[in-house]
Amino acid sequence: MSRDRVRGLLLPLLAFLVFGGLWEIVSSLGIWPPSAFPSPRRAAIGMWELTVNGTLLKHSVASLFRVTAGFYLAVVLGVPLGMMLGWWKTGQLMFNSIIQFLRPISPLAWIPLAMLWFGIGDKPAIFLIFLSSFFPLLVNTVSAVNRINSLYFQVAANFNFNRFETFSLVIFPAILPAVMPALRISLGIAWLVVVAAEMIAVKSGLGYLILDSRNALRMDYVVDAMIAIGIIGICLDRIIVKLTRIKSVSWGSV
Image (cartoon, rainbow, N blue to C red; front, side, top):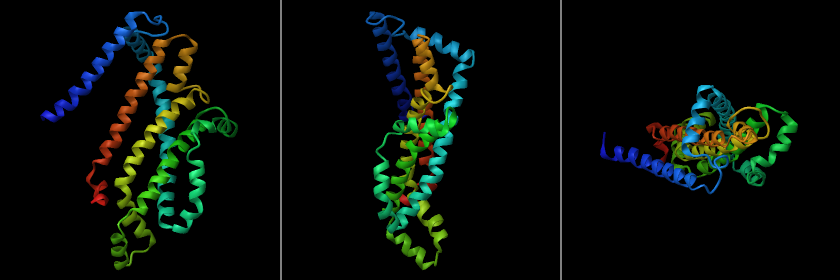
């Protein structure tokens, strides 16, 4: 194992140990009662309880399902639509104002409407996750298409590419280096939104676990759910980072 890799593993571990130490010190000072500020030991015991009885796994799977469904739907619709608008300048001029009007609206502002439209359950949460990911992907894809080197299109014209070939063999590979960071950001936003949505519209998931634990005055479970959210978020982010390092993804940035 190389020295840089060892440093890359040890330094984050050291940071977490320091964080845990500070957490223990603050909890021991008695600024807040243990019921409001659980110690690392109490949180560890609660994590063990949630893991053994399957509660943590059940809620984690529910959250991941909603994020996966909403995020994939945003990718399937947002990236192709962004490619089309980036290529079709008239459509870009026509719809850009609407996109910029809807984009700043927080996905959480749609919660009342989502509950009226879809009721209680997975659908409103998936809809909110879709909204949180769709607009960043759409805007970044349009911008990526606008930045494609015109030389690529000249080569495509020389080979008499039709529209489908231009999209699949030129535009799509060329925008991947710019779209992959947008995927990373959008997935992070989706993971944030699902927790908030689950506190209101569903009866499962890590967000619901936080709310239910708060109502039961189990702040250790609240902290445990927050830890699970952080760990899963890191794993999701690492998956996207690994994808960005694939050689076939980066040719368009050359």
